[in-house]
Image (cartoon, rainbow, N blue to C red; front, side, top):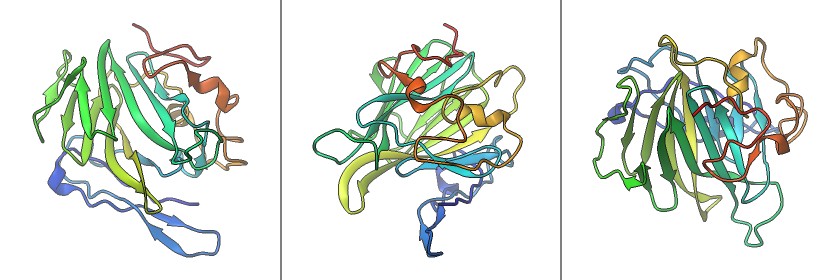
Length: 243
């Protein structure tokens, strides 16, 4: 699978969801993309994370990390920012590794807790449901904010801008999950030494070449070393987040 990335902004009217994936036989699937003008993040490097889950490196190239159904994984970790997510599947037995998707996602920004739930279509800030629609809610550091709409949720974090698109089905069957556009931002002191399944690719200098379905040939170590015990946990080898 190969991907085409673009840039993200939080002006809902500017979004045109489309991502192109090419099958091994050369046929084209269309999933999501964005149309950029309108925010300070416009023109920066952006990648997509979508499907079961396909990651696009900030250096170019793509790779899959299937993980394990029901387990929690770190996507990005940095000094001021942490993003963990649960990998979900429509496999009713709740086990196996293939065809997982990114479900509930938890974000820590300088001690502030943000939770995005695709099944309920809700966003929480410090445990309280966000009711305002299409309105920026600024965090204690006013550089950073969240915004909620029923279809897309936005998190402006130190060094990153993340848009989570709520997806309700997998191949025609119900499975609530998120697809993502993740953009680098360049404010002073924002992004410092990111790691995680996606975050580490900020440092890469060449397109990645995947060798398997668990990030082999791309990620440092192996996928089990990115497992965390809960959505808010920091108990994994490569944690960079500081309380």
